[in-house]
Image (cartoon, rainbow, N blue to C red; front, side):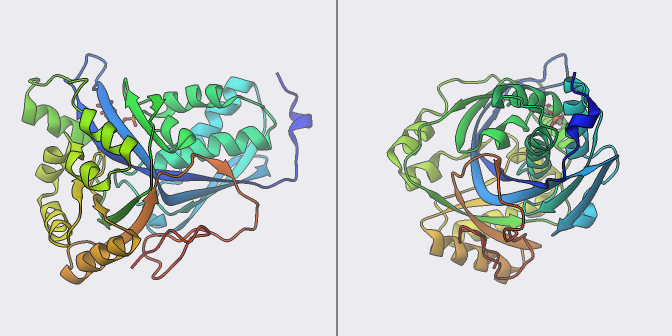
Length: 332
Ligand code: C5P
């Protein structure tokens, strides 16, 4: 147990955590606990959540960036839940003010909320000097949500269990993405429930199914990766949001190596041949008027990491022409 007095610090801690795209998402039949066994391949991409933690007597939260108005700031916010969980488990009796700057689409199937929670765990652990290992933080992350451990780890990883058990994947090269963002999000739970209705229990996870995809990643073969992209939840996401067929088709017409709905959607991800080609695909989506916003990114990128307080912020979808500190993020 750490005494509250020793926890006071004037420091401001800033952590940046990435969003993700599921290169493959294979879903088994619903289990009695309500969750579905998954076999998935996550890739962290250069759309970021920036979380700043400052000392406070209470637990409070503010949000900025695109779609900030759609993020709950009450106790249901995953970043606040993360701070609360860390405090409870380490016996810390201190508060924190968290500020989230959103660069990942909200409720978009890219784990933006999960990235906030992962970043909040790391930031509060530093602010409160609780000194947890990455493994311990990852354990807490899994309690917060199936997708929370991945933004801590970053890069490219195979996820099993509920998606929370991670094994790093060997990857050569970098992959360029264009994203079609929809203003109205989709509830993950609803997409899984629709998946249940559509498949009526008739599904089994095939451990060998992603052999071609893993080979493409090891070889750095973007066209082969494009052909191997797969999402078992895509049908359900399209059932709930049929208009997603439009950005999928436009991206394909613009020469994408592969297109799919990201995770539970509704963000549509298109794999491009190059950074320039990603901008071309994003521009085609904008010109066709089939998305509320677009973004481009590269993957894989590292997981949650400390950034110097006061360094330039990352751009958010909706900030025209914004360029991230690594010169990789752009909205068109
Ligand atoms: O784990 P998390 O709370 O983020 O999941 C949100 C919802 O997504 C769950 O309540 C569940 O309905 C669904 N889910 C699932 N199977 C998974 C992961 C999530 O059914 N492996």
